[in-house]
Amino acid sequence: MTLDELNALPENAARDLFLLQCHARFWAHHMAAARPFSSQRDVLDTAESLWRQAEESDVLEAFAGHAEIGDLHALRNKFAAAEQGQVSVASDETLRQLQLKNREYKEKFGFIFIVCATGKPADEMLALLKARLPNARETELRKGAAEQAKITQIRLKKLLDIV
Image 1 (cartoon, rainbow, N blue to C red):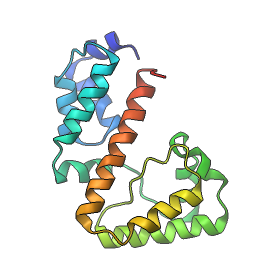
Image 2 (tube, rainbow, N blue to C red):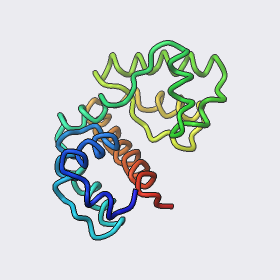
Image 3 (cartoon, rainbow, N blue to C red):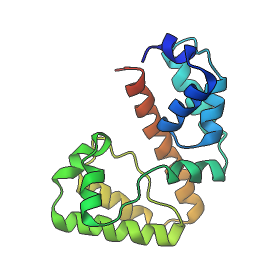
């Protein structure tokens, strides 16, 4: 999509498109309202600035937009996605541990583990998950929100074909 096409979208269509990038209605609404953007950099900077204004409910809404890991088959499918491609070569034991630790994480914090998985193999993902499990909920909200910001930037760059 070009910048001109993004700027020309009707408000509702732009909001829906932004919701696909980050599933937080507050953020998507304000991104759509911020148009027209003057440059691709303006899109990325606005996205980052608006995300810094997100409240806990917005962050949790964005987290909820991510697929939850269920059984091993769902785990394999999730980690075979484009954003998480390297994890698809994981051993069954690593995938079982990811499943177990993700469940433990959600039970402890009340939301799923969020990490920008691009370029990270399964064992690194598992190590990150294990390292974050001892954190306090407030710390995990902050870390997850920072990871969501990275994910959103990657998605916006793909959307706008920014290299």
